[in-house]
Length: 118
Image 1: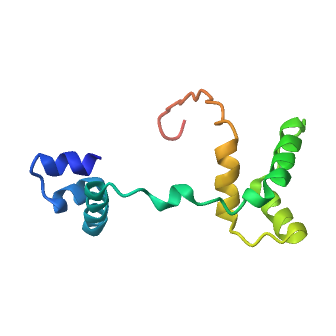
Image 2 (image 1 turned 120 degrees about the horizontal axis):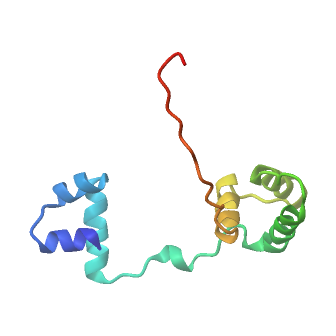
């Protein structure tokens, strides 16, 4: 959307790409899709972890109920691969879990600066 507005204002594709930190071909592709009003095909695809949703939900509930520090998602990934034959990537499991977990609580940070050597 930003690129579309910028081109309407007369900015070049090159300057838009530089400002956004992407390749010119990416800007051209996005503008072409906006003009054609084409739907994004990725929205309709099912996640690779969807078939294992019940297992992942059970694991997440166990982690939430645990009094100790929760295990990492790597443990869940290893469980899915070894016991259930999951063929997807670790990143797909990580994305799946992150979408379903609440965001972490913001913790205040106090920064103390001192002179070197103190």
